[in-house]
Image (cartoon, rainbow, N blue to C red; front, side, top):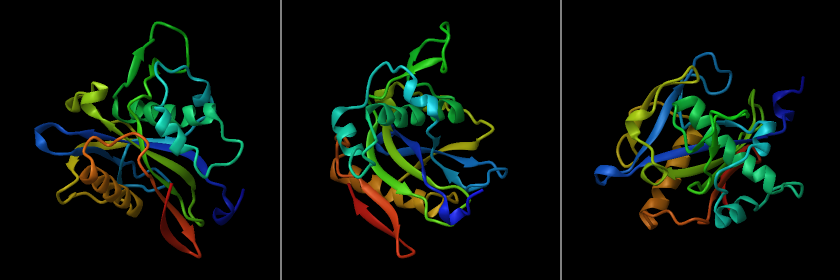
Length: 222
């Protein structure tokens, strides 16, 4: 088994669902189980690692071309469209598994890996973060924003799971009132800045990139 400092980050995705009703912006977070090795008992967005089969799952609509172009920046040469599609699928698969929200076309009557075909068209890529060396798990996480109304999400339909507990909607322009990892707070700050510049969150906006240099977490851009 590799030492934590030598672990190679694996692809992961997280989705920040935004409820912009009632003239405010709320995002969905949940508490990770105490049984998790990585970030236990902290509030995070739904998300997780990209599984190998995610790249083979059929989708009902692809990522927006501008989001795809931004995702490709500073990625290994081997990264292809299937990999990027798999990252988007991972975001919506995890949202389904962890919060009970389905974004896509129901195919539960057909054999397959998922009971729905994910609709990736509403995913806006706005941040990326690589877990620093030394952690028990390391991820190269892409963060996507998704407007609840555009995706047909009923905010009251979110349900707890064994992976995310105490799901709640928090106003990002007020005190959060929950304990979150450092990177989750930084990503929320980025989202606030994007919304202040343009509340519509245009596809392909410049994305923040958090990585470690000389032992310090720094912010770069994509």
